[in-house]
Image 1 (spheres, rainbow, N blue to C red):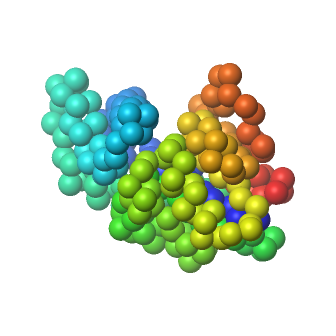
Image 2 (tube, helix red, strand yellow; image 1 turned 45 degrees about the vertical axis):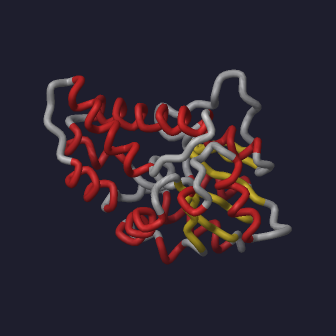
Length: 207
């Protein structure tokens, strides 16, 4: 099976940015605004670089709370995020089971490559894909389809800790697996994911 994994929050822990952004609440507000912007840009048929979106969202959230923002520190922090503790054993298990394991992210390709290398995950991945390569952000169908087109004929599953990512992958024809990290729930009213698990090794057992 072709296992396609989202990166930010699914593989990598954004909580490492709390000190840089101003705490967990501001970090969640920042990332939520970034994703809201992604969804709006995508729904209206446009494309923007995700790094730029994230930077603009950081500036906006800092202004709302009367804080200063250091975009360089945020950028450095994003490129050096640690993996969630379950990720490395989960990837190892997927590979041992014979699955093809790739990453698909909205982040620019160079950023994603740096993130996964710095987190020690790059050797466990067969390939890294970015929405930047097709000029459309997830959950538009093009990012998912560029991955499945690279592995024609393989049964594919999108693994993510975001309901919107699961919905986009399902619409593009992939099976889906929701990784229910703390606070993660399926989108209300959406079709259920093909698989649901709280950790990556648990999910590997289901595939």
